[in-house]
Length: 196
Image (cartoon, rainbow, N blue to C red; front, side):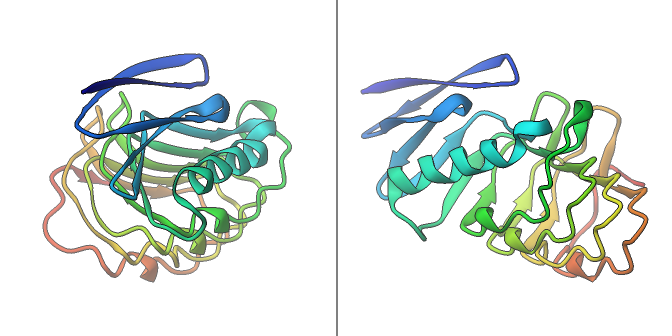
């Protein structure tokens, strides 16, 4: 059995093919989730952006909970962008606690970015990402988050095995309140790309 899934976010679509006993379920406006043996995989890139960031986050989590039940770990097979103040967004997204059961990111977007936390005027914490484990296959990008004090919550990221299209594996800058990067203490190994 072959199931073709589409993930649509910010007017972009990308087909993903899964084989085996896969069950596709609707993921609101963001695309679809693929449930395989109790583990949920969200296919494609996920964008939590602009004035709809909180609604996007709520829809994503509600769909994942509907597919696998509340509290079960899930994986994203694509890139994750959290950018609540982008394009004039005025959302007051202060945390990403709703993502606490995100267990892994196994892909990157077309720019080579696995996790982008960018331009969030009110974001004070990423501790909701504490469930994230393992390696990121693309860039980890944290920029323009003026209220973010620490990177606590990213301790489970063990390595970065790739780089973005500009050759960077890790980019952290212009986070005015950032006083500690100890949340990255789980990173091991050599970065294949540049550090900024």
